[in-house]
Length: 364
Image (cartoon, rainbow, N blue to C red):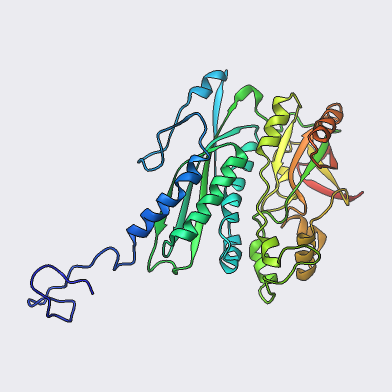
């Protein structure tokens, strides 16, 4: 027990001789600022590895500074922002005691969203709340965030580690991310020019990404996450924690090379059904051909274990398509050549047809 002020060495209660309560420290209340400081020191190298030339200053300030000089090269610069989380996938991470992959997921969910209009992610901030800060675990999580930022080409310029004793269990944590991107308004991709006859390409996902895990966790509740998964060299838990693929560098490279893309959709919660329709103009449907792409084994496994009907699966998981691109029939060969030249796998999953702004499915 930490003693209060005054001569109370002989006291065994938390009150002094006048009946007043002894002083209570922040650490006794459950917040260990020293452990938090150790965590900040440990993440410095990871954070600095994400810095772009526009970053001003260093970790530890009251605000993250980023030069806006890049916007001067744009005729009509537009800032695009996004915020997201990892969802209940973090519970799988906690059970597996693997904390770096969800940091990549956090970045991916934000940057892939802002990318959908053709914007380049510039900088990122994270927020991690936990019942008790453990510097080793926190370092792993932020290292994952930093790796995601490196993959996306954006800078990690700030964040917050929040300790919530009495509100969250010691081992519990949650993550949120915030991204700011920029695009020249005249070059933004908004789907408004999509028309009948356009071709829909799908870029493969790396697995479940970060959606549908409330269902996934129900499915695997009685399974051993440490058991080998099918013919892979990974355990079931490791496969479930495969990080969300980040499409930023590929898409920006395609756009800068002159590939004309009319619309892009990040396939997240709601699956193909409830994300591809978000880029459709009035009077247009997306006719998606079932069987025109490969579904990752882990998604097949979850769907089988849950006895999920195909239509339900398509509005729950990405089902193997992490990003969708719509191009004109004339530009489709150009996109094919560009992807082939970069050794990037892809699927041609359907076409745009007259309709009412929905996604419809048909046999291949």
